[in-house]
Length: 139
Length: 130
Image (cartoon, rainbow over all chains, first blue to last red; front, top):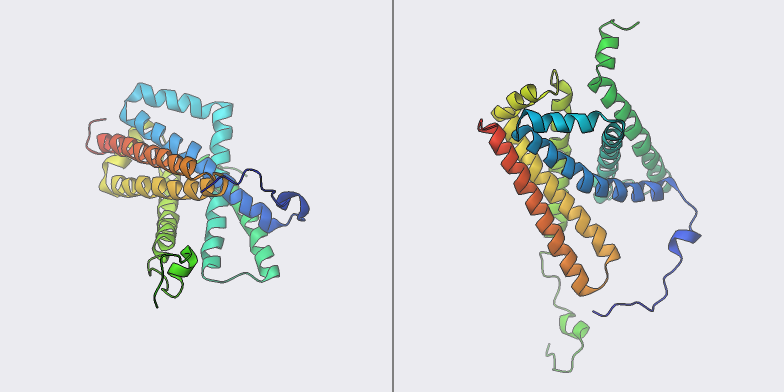
């Protein structure tokens, strides 16, 4: 195969009016790449830190609790939920469902809404805020 | 139907039908997606249900079969799905045949190495060496 270096490209990104489906499509790729590169690296480091003893684990916890570390963890959690809901949408579309313009638009928007809501809920539970609220410890 | 030596590539395959296994790769990608829906939810809910995320608690969780076995499956499925996804990603942006093959090789090596490293760490924890 020869590289088609001299052939012109259609200005596909600049001439289309942006819609939620385009945003969700690109977010699916971006979040998937972030989860694969940063998420899996973090998972590997975390498991190695547990395996390598208290000192290694302490180092991981220090980085994770740093402002930047928290930002990455919140970002990856959102990326997970966005990819998760967008992926579920794709599995339905793989069955041939949801291609009607209004339905497609509605579920595109819903993946974004659900991902933000699920991220907030995840950290509400992880930080103990929601359990405390439900048990009446916080008024 | 006889196909002469001078036939074009299209002429050679026309009328032969599909190879009957073109959908296998596509189905396999979906299979690992569905598996990861289940396993990623398991991992997230497990982390949320643990009383704390200090080392002793996490080690105790991963020493039990109920923690170690799904975690091993999660590692395998996550690296496989990540590899599948990155492959689709580079397929769209790397057009030169040689570069594409090299990128696929590097991606596969990285995925296998990452999965092996994670599984080794998990085994060390699960079998009580951590």
